[in-house]
Image (cartoon, rainbow, N blue to C red):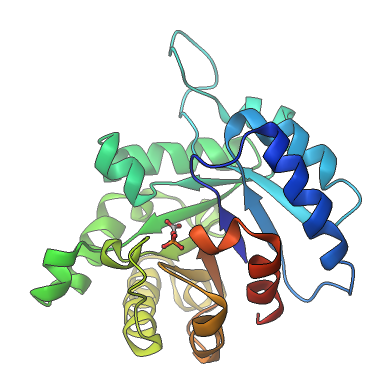
Length: 245
Ligand code: PGA
């Protein structure tokens, strides 16, 4: 269960979240929980989560190890700050920062090299959803991006299916729609990386996940977890989602 905080919560608000959330997690942990705060709050989050099973990740990474790239953060820097996961290719990054499938591949490779687990995001826009072209988009994003990994590299990633029309809109994909998209991603995985890789790769669903729709989504065998935005900002709400896993 992953919490994508996007550009919400400063360092103080991050500490306040952990103060409330960490005790709620103490009842034994049945799934992996990863929180992706703003990069400036990663060290504080790592410290706050130290005694818990919660892991911390970055929301973005740059592909070079170091260099003259003003404003960017490398995988090595994230790792040194205590992060162990990273989001790659979120639709907001694709839309506002012009990230492409080939850039997503480079960032995924950089993450693996820095020993971070990347969650590679993909998903179709509203227009493609309406026109029945969701699978076409997923196949294209897969082919232009993570299909370029080696089999060994692919074993180290997780994938998030995030239909753009469901993100922050309150209009979640039905479990059936999500499962169908996940099957498509798994089938592309099987063609490129083999059956075992397709069975083992974890595919999370993201897009308006809430306590009242998580149970239905997690009932689908195809759905291995969730990437949660808005509903992860409140400790009481996010713990309900975690507990439904
Ligand atoms: P949302 O965001 O849960 O607020 O729809 C999900 C995401 O963008 O990862």
